[in-house]
Amino acid sequence: MRESKLTEMVKGISPAEFKRFGEFLNSPYHNKSRKIIQLYELINFSYDEFDANIITNEKIAKAIFSGEGDKDQNVRTLISTFTSLLEEFLIVEELNNNSLHGKTFLLRSLRDRNILKTFDMVSKEITEIQQKDFNRNTDYYYNEFTFKETWLNYHGEDLDMDLDKSYLEMSDNADHLFIVTKLKVLNTVISRRILSGISIYKTYWAVENILKYIEKNIDDIEKKHPIIYSEYKILMMVLEPETVKHFHDLEKHVFQNIIKYNEDELEQVYYSLSNYCVNKIALGEDKFVNELYKIHSNFEKTGFYSKNKNLQYTDFIGVIICGLNMKHMKWVEHFFETYKGNIASEVKRDTINLSSALIAFHDKRYKDCIGYLSKVGYKFTYFYLKSKETLIKAYYELGEIESLEAVVDAAKHYLKRHKEMLSIHFDRYILFLNYVTNLMKLDKKQKPELKILMKKLDENRTTIAREWLIEKIIEMK
Image 1 (cartoon, rainbow, N blue to C red):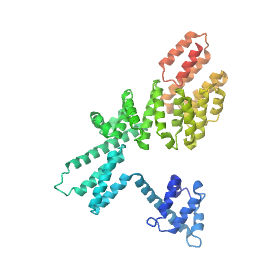
Image 2 (tube, rainbow, N blue to C red):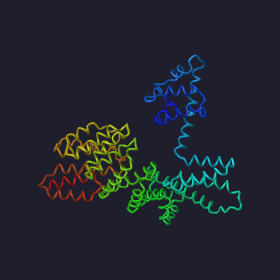
Image 3 (cartoon, helix red, strand yellow):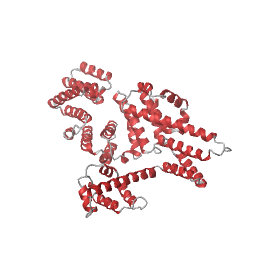
Image 4 (tube, helix red, strand yellow):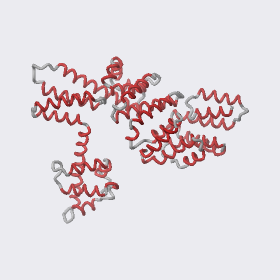
């Protein structure tokens, strides 16, 4: 079996889902073919290592179609049917995971069959669920609009019934659906660096009107439409980064409601808050180190990291660096040991070694630090730059000047080759390398030069490892 649609789908679902799929296939309502069950059992037997090489078309033909003619065609038809049933199963899973979708479809069915009492009962259930739902996102407003539309289609023929309020509510839902969808699109576009904040106004229709409407009704939006409020503040943090109020408003809103967010919405606010802090720290605003730690620790308490089984290297290492900067070593060790198993597999080894090097450096175990760094691969630019920065600092602490000079020289050449890709970070790293070079040439007697170096660092607050450089200058004084 080639790396086919079937192989991709089977490998893409969880073991628990595959087990439920077996139960789905054993229901005669969904499947009446014994051969489909046989194929499921054949795959299930090798599920842990399933791929196209383990279960080939020939193996399927031999196990299921022994003695029958045109085995190739039979196998292709069986695989096609099996895949279609798996697609149907995933649709059912989605409906089970979103009960409102299912109830809305049920409501339409009841309407079409004129089943009045049950229609009213299901309508009441939908209303109660919607009123309690904090995550009023695109799905919420779409469901609410569809529900209202279905309900009005059912009752609309009753000319004696006052439906003005219901039609107004449906119109409001349409407005809120448009607003939340538009904000999510804008935030996605900006996060992918497709457009700058300024060009958003020119490229995307109605942005200015949406923002004016939200600002005019901000208290009502925060209270009744919390996800629109979140998306609005996320956008404003990008459009007006110098207005720190937007960050603090969102931070307060999130911390007050953190257990109410679903996983997708929680992830959205997490990355927006943490990225804002990281950018501020890069600009030399050190007070945001504490804000970043608050975000990490509060989200950790909710199980945010434990639920994420595919932690990205930048996220994991970023948390480690933040904890080290705050000198919360017990928390750093707890985070490292608890979540290192959740790091995305393709970079797990490099992420663990780089994190271990950073912890060792913080503990002044410089030789251990260098040992860990020697095991880090450079699949991504981040690993190279962070490794070389840490290696330079370790060699400086050990007084190994020749090794230090060699690494600085290699890093400068690397930066020049990747200047366009690094953008603003190029200058930040070049400054770091130049300051390290200057430090190597100075000694304690050259106090005027040390003072000049300190002044330059004060002016260039975006310099990489600025706090460490200042610490080394103070030691020389």
